[in-house]
Image 1: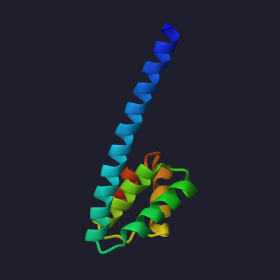
Image 2 (image 1 turned 60 degrees about the vertical axis):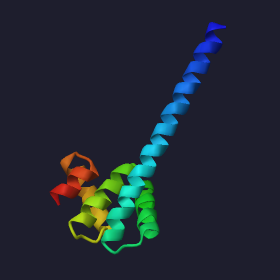
Image 3 (image 1 turned 45 degrees about the horizontal axis):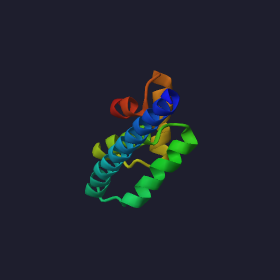
Length: 104
């Protein structure tokens, strides 16, 4: 019985954490949407670029999304080449793409 109760508690904790992460992700995408649209870029296209590059580069979507946002805010067109440059800089500096985007 104790094992079943512990498993149930773990499942509830997992569900709560998953819900919290989903809400956080939605908020991050909403912020991203505001940034890219204020720069005159298409949100859906930008979102797809982020997801595709994250998959290709083996980086998290959140990390690439943040770097993309930093580049956009700095007035740099965050094309695939710009993201590759930031990723290479991050690798060279031994840091994440967000820090590299700020440094570039």
